[in-house]
Length: 156
Image (cartoon, rainbow, N blue to C red; front, side):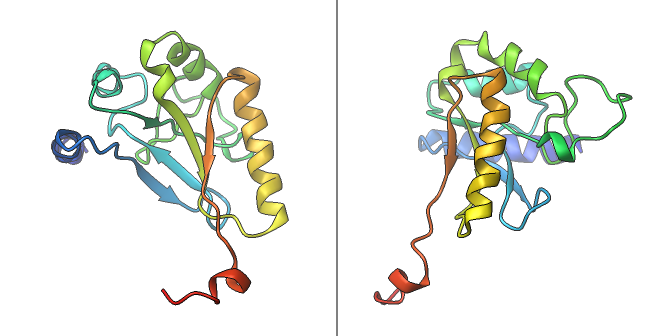
């Protein structure tokens, strides 16, 4: 809702006053720890998103991504629409538009949180390749989980 977006925007402005680069996410994206991350509460190419991405206090922003296999089969939705969770439905067209902006150097894709299995790394690699087909210079981020064998040696 618009009210939700305005509240998120106020929260973001507060975070930016401390130079914190926020992102929001939806878990699951078809896989256990796969993420659908986004920085702006508005659609990706909305003027208010552009304003947020261009803010000099913001050092980086998450670009939402929906894997090809999870996109709607229907073309009834607008090319640059975004679901409530911030996922773009036409990443090719959106990436072409974003890449023309000076803030593109701050963009990254956060696809998965702490992969632990080889097939999860394979999935990240496939999704990264899908992104880099449209934007070869795109940065893809994931976190690393050290595993129970290593972590159990330490007391947290």
